[in-house]
Length: 421
Image 1 (cartoon, rainbow, N blue to C red):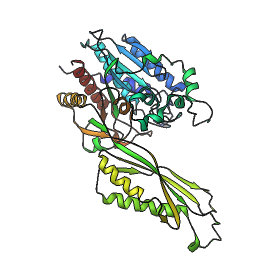
Image 2: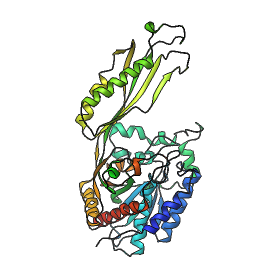
Image 3: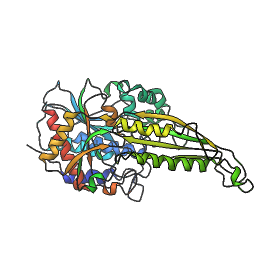
Image 4: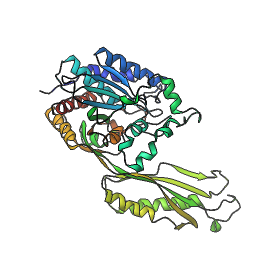
């Protein structure tokens, strides 16, 4: 039998959560552990307690609302996402996964759906890292012992607790945690001893599903990626008195190199490959001074490690070269392998979408999510719903209530398939 969640309850939760951190023009700013985030947590507790769920928190304020199953010895099946946002973000990123998890529990309770395993709706703390960097902080700590060393070293617990606010540069995440009222016990953390599987519902954050006329994405993996800084060393001089032919303009050099990178990477001919320069540092950044130092970021993502290797070789080829009389240096920042989700769980999502006659396709995730780290700990997968115009991390971010409810129904039935194991 296939079950459907309530459109009315889903709409109510979307509207209510959108009030917590309302920025006044359609979106929200809801930093982790802020007063606005606490309002969201209180609402979650209120609704989950009402259906008889037990509420627990761990030492990083991750929250777990659990409905018992018929087998007291069975491991939990968890549905998890985050309630915090970026500055001036939208009403769907992260929180839709929480809404979906809550709606699954509410549907199970309202319809008396039989289930063997305890079912848990979880809120991860500080996924965005907007106020206290880095992103995916809590999952990075909770899953740390299972992560590849190159990633795990970036999420050492003591360093995360010492993370300083981007606003005042003084207060720390650890201090906010202590003041939050939501710090619980370490033994309550997600673990393979107590949890059987994890599902995460999320908006796509891109245009692929909408452009294909589809509502749901069956997510197979989180793309591998690497991140580098490309640096240029020139010579500062007066903008009005130093002749052009003698200049060592680091910004001009960087512009030439960036255009070269685009040309060479595009020649590889991989349409799924994405790469981005999102940050540029210019020194001294004075309008009357020729820049003597510039560096820019390069973020490259693709599923196939061989493709990433080809791009990496192009980027590394710049190291030690001169561009416009300026020396170039390429510095590796970090990289991650493609994280593939559990094939059996992916199959359950696919089956649920088919049986519900939901318009769907396989898709990968170019963005990182807590599920990416959880996948190293226990069987995990994700479900996407389409994003209007592909917009996310901005206030116009939107997915219709009907599509959200469709995605949640897929989540519900996939979880029930997992429960039968």
